[in-house]
Length: 239
Image (cartoon, rainbow, N blue to C red; front, side):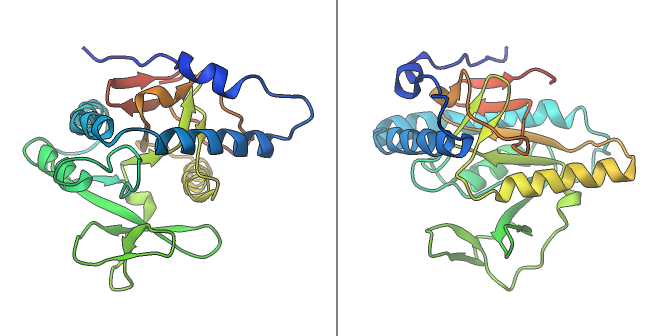
């Protein structure tokens, strides 16, 4: 049985209610500061214990989504994900997050993993996963180097989306760069302009206590219907 994470009561006192005089941007920054501080304070043992279970929960979600997609059995599932760092979910996965994900998917679903590279104008390009062509940016993020050939984001079936938190309506609080919001909005706009139905799906990824009653959001912020934590999958309204 799939589990459903409830809103974290532990964050209510930490964030409190929004004051009328502050902008949404100010509220977002306040949330980001507090969540980042809380992540820094998480013990390594807790992070390792969570991440030991995270891939299994993610595989369950991918299995269920793959069953709804219009694809043949021998057609590889294209999954876009990221390389977690610091205290992000997955960063303490034994054996590495992407290698563990690939190993778990190997006997279940033929798949290809693509990861992002930061480009100009808040754009992301997507490249086949290879541990041999990674560089570390000045922000400490690992990404494909210039030898890698990008894959169109329109080819992606499932995108695993990082965040600092989600709320019970599926709204995402990101790091503030806007890269994923731009990528997902462009994918949605392309589908709508073509008049085609979409088989594209997204999966959010956060720690168990980072699904909150509400997070501040703007009109352009991405709203997801599925988020995975180490406790299981949470389906939001509309899923």
